[in-house]
Image (cartoon, rainbow, N blue to C red):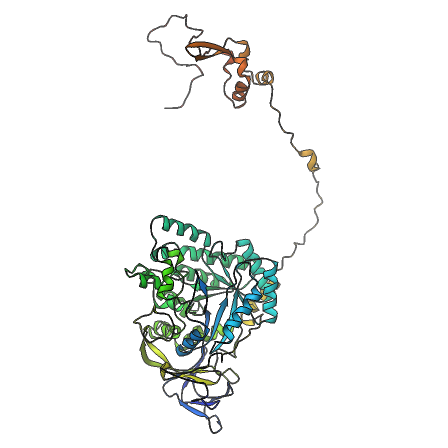
Length: 608
């Protein structure tokens, strides 16, 4: 690989792309593209181009909008370690793979100001990024300060998307009541609510269970997070958001059932978007049972990759049919030694996999080459839909006059085999290792400059040359239906004739209070129940102490007997029963063979 400095081989800011097939999400046309000063200035056949422009021959190739990755996590901390793809290495790898804009995620600690955390992320990124970038902000706790920070970021800082977690109990997880308030606030601000959908309470319980069973390896991570915990959380988030008429975006859709929940909700008319990941489309979770711990741990992410081998195809079908909308990479890369922090406890393995460099090639191979989607749908799920949903369209995600000059020359016939030995990321493992992909970006043009050539073998980037992309709130693409429904959903009272019938006289509440019952005396109990008073009988309790038999008067046990009477037990004080061993009928001669039909205490119909 040869890396140059911006300006050496791209001295001119004018580029003429000739003879290619321009592919947008809605159509494909044979056309030339002229770029000047970072903007598409000419589009069509036989366009006039001033002299001195660099000419790129695109005959037989596709000219597509630069990719937009809506889910990266550069320089993120997890279990005491920091991901190895920082904002420089991560955005550089993205450009090589054909992605010209990434949206990273600010992750405040619990109790930390969202606004202050946002500023920290900007400081980390601005001096390193080599491509355009933007930010989501995670809401990791809830309170009035959070609501104020969200309003500040949305109105003044260009943040129009906020992420919440239904996972990570006792760390980032919000309760259902907090989620309801969060969705309400998002709708009022006109920002998009994003959700990481996993049932954090049950994940915590399942994690304890697996560890208690002695399952401590990477397979325990998958076993502790079964897919119904993902689909349940997705369904719950959609239901709560629908109650407050808030659009939501489910990030990291990793299972068949979660994808189906989103598809069903969209068919009901819910404004919900779903984002599978490149890893979820290109591999599966069976690797977490690999005998090699390094291989198994490298595939640990959350929600986990599913061991069901049919999952990638099913998610691709949903993506191709429009039930899911965007492919993210969820790029969180940790080396083997960093993953080894959890070598004896899977719950301590830093979660994350690679994908920012290989995302577009994996989608082309699994989606277009397989015949599941066409080239236009490919552009939609890798670029245009993200631009529309996050309110950057048509500046981003489209090739047209006036659009930003983020353009890829894509060779649909070229192939490359993904390998850790040749990728540009800093991580020492690639979850797509050995996958041969058709579809390779020959040239990447970002901000009107050629930054990658010859399929990434030549890279011209300058650290810090990338730009921050602010995003306005109240995106029409997301909120048009929401605004229409707000008018329709306003509750109205029923107009009816006033009731003119009789009205019962209601007693004031204070007169309806029931007096606390007092404990009745023994005389009152025996009188009201008709139970004979054993105080007047000869009933005694026989106690033996040191061989001396003592007969205790039953009057000494009044409280005990009263308690028995109150509980509905027969009062034995008027019977001839004695615990002394002597009975009143001891002097009655016994008759052999006498059948007892009415035993003491009455007959019973119970069959024993």
